[in-house]
Amino acid sequence: MKAFVYERYGPPEALRMAEVDKPSPDAGEVLVRVLAASVNAADWHVLRGRPLFSRATLGLLRPKHKVLGGDVAGQVEATGSDVARFQPGDEVYANLLDHGFGGFADYVSVPADAMAPKPANLSFEEAAAVPMAAVTALQGLRHHGELRPAQRVLINGATGGVGSFAVQLAKASGAEVTGVTSTRNLDLVRSLGADHVVDYTTTDFADGGRRYDLILDTVGNRSVRDLKRALAEGGKAAVTGFTSMRRLLGVSLRGGKDVAQVQAHVTTAELELLSELIEAGKVRPRIDRRYPFAEIPAAIAYLEQGHARAKVVIEVARG
Ligand SMILES: NC(=O)c1ccc[n+]([C@@H]2O[C@H](COP(=O)([O-])OP(=O)(O)OC[C@H]3O[C@@H](n4cnc5c(N)ncnc54)[C@H](OP(=O)(O)O)[C@@H]3O)[C@@H](O)[C@H]2O)c1
Image (cartoon, rainbow, N blue to C red; front, side):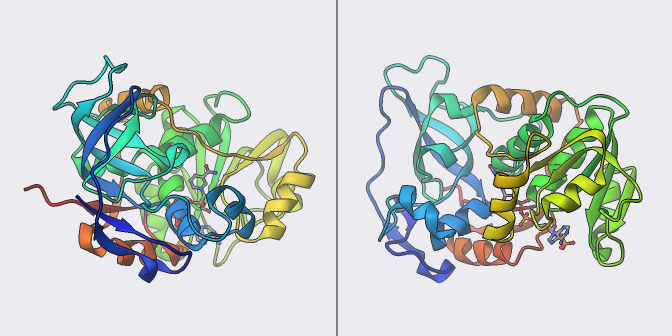
């Protein structure tokens, strides 16, 4: 089968298309024929082996996992002996971040507990846009407890992969949502359902004016002090991204109980919950760009610039 592989850490050009062995599923796994994928920040972080400390798990000198790709949607080809929930032909979506990646390929073996039936009202490309970003948004918003109606929620980075889901999920919970983005994206944030918008090129959401019960910072460009200044009494902030080691360490060392770094983990239960919201019309993935399989390096390079408008997906030819 064909796959994009890399043997050394580097830029997207380090990826090359190659013929590799088709995987065979272990007892608890499902072999999925990949019909669409999406790219995430994790793909370029892992491709570059950045931050450097991540190489302790990714492989010190060379990458342990040769094939990237966390988010996939496709059709079940075969199942392992312990898997009863899925049958060949089922349409599914999955995330492989906790399972060694492998989605930028014709086939991938996925643990059955990291996948779910594809939402019926989404195409394969739309479904592939969901797992990593939407579960991160969901777990970030719920990290400090359940969202309550009328809570004032601010999403920093409201037009990114994670942010575009977070705005919709917070709205679906009845929150009053403020989205932070740049001038060109203000209408996009409104169209996602935000009640208020903040243009970060002209306005600082952390100037102490308006305060929020919950902040989801998907960008990770603000100090703990800034985030605390923007929080109402008893408010909490969850941070999913980071723009420098200083920011990452700041949250880890000085966040306390109120400001926490969130690491998302995709499970079947989370995907099933998202499927319900999607099929009920409360959440819908937004696609910025679509790239053919052969242009996966270009898709990653585009995302790495940090200004994608929602999700970037990969179309895999069906032949
Ligand atoms: N912890 C986890 O488990 C986990 C999981 C997924 C992602 N992440 C992390 O979360 C972060 C976000 O991921 P993503 O997929 O949403 O990334 P993304 O799609 O690349 O985010 C791009 C968006 O960020 C916005 N942005 C850039 N600079 C901004 C600023 N100064 N203020 C507000 N918005 C700004 C851009 O809007 P403009 O074009 O308007 O600037 C763009 O829409 C990444 O750092 C990623 O590594 C973590």
